[in-house]
Image 1: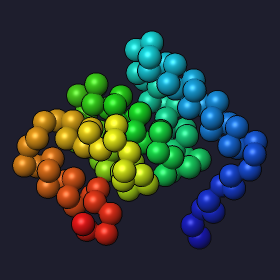
Image 2: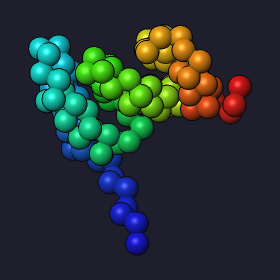
Image 3: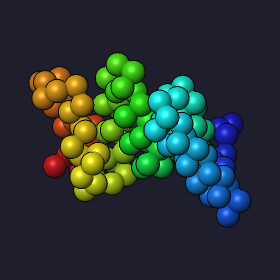
Image 4: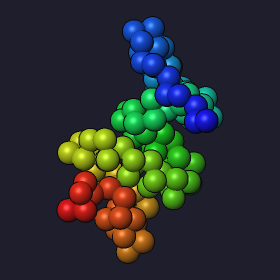
Length: 112
């Protein structure tokens, strides 16, 4: 039997917001392990949380984890394909054929 999705109660939404703020503060202070843990905690509660996906991709990129960063940007763009900051980051590792191919395969809504 699959684990049920956690309900997003007011208390849980407040917890998500607080955890996201703390993770962002850690990221701004270059405490990347702490920031990553916070963003992943948010994603455990809400896997499609745009800000957590996007900001975690920036953390991963800054740590040299470019494939993971690209995967996270793709997931973020699936939730908000029009967001300019995430859209501009879809080729974080440079305009390589591989990143463009991954972008086309993972980011574009409805295969457009």
